[in-house]
Length: 201
Length: 136
Image (cartoon, rainbow over all chains, first blue to last red):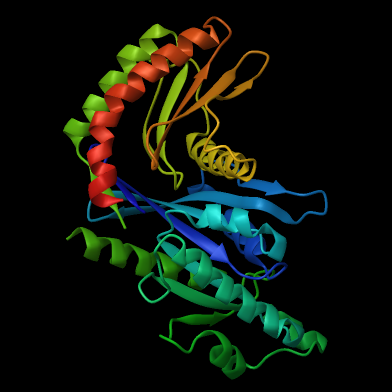
């Protein structure tokens, strides 16, 4: 639910990083925070448990400059990935404009990716939203682990599991090393802004 | 779905918040939506806060407290207020989509603040409710 302020010529857009627990959502935001520190005027907000897991959400406001004379402020959020935090995931999704689904590329996480995507669809449905109409992209994370001999899913398997219904852009990535983190972010911002423009025109 | 407020609408909202709250000693006031977007914010010029982070946390906090209320069988809690040593924060729902947040010092009583917030909310409802029905 982007808000367009005609007085200040400012558009606020909400993008949520969703996916299974320990999949790298927070690591994506931490990388973006380091990489674009000059565009971020505030501290990254993070609500964590003692075990350093996301409890509620991470939040990072991010200026992308002017589009058609409007200042665009992107608000990046992550959800807590652990299954038990479903109520808080639903809260964070409220008013979402675009989604990055961060899948864990490790073979052992195949089923948790599928469950998390299903959970996303269910939670969006509670707001009468759907992945069919929302802008979203996929990120297949932890690809750097292949070099350490950890069994990974081939891209074709990830695509077959997660990106069949109405195929969306996807990015093999390593959030830890920063590979394709910015490409993922740029794509979801472009798609989301295009969708808002289409809606407003 | 997106929604828009124009200069005239925002000026009217800001006039209400200024005359009812800032002019009566409130340090800072935010009108936000439940997604965490800031519709408008005003302050008395004394202190600058990280308003975007505050709005995101306030929307999340309000959502969490509402969910807690439902679990214990309440529709919602009528008073949402945190007291600090010098600064206090008060939350007031305007409609299902909008929230008014005020930050104030110990020079204002909670009762007076609640009265002024209630008056502001009545004025704001008229401006925001058509928007809720049509666009959100």
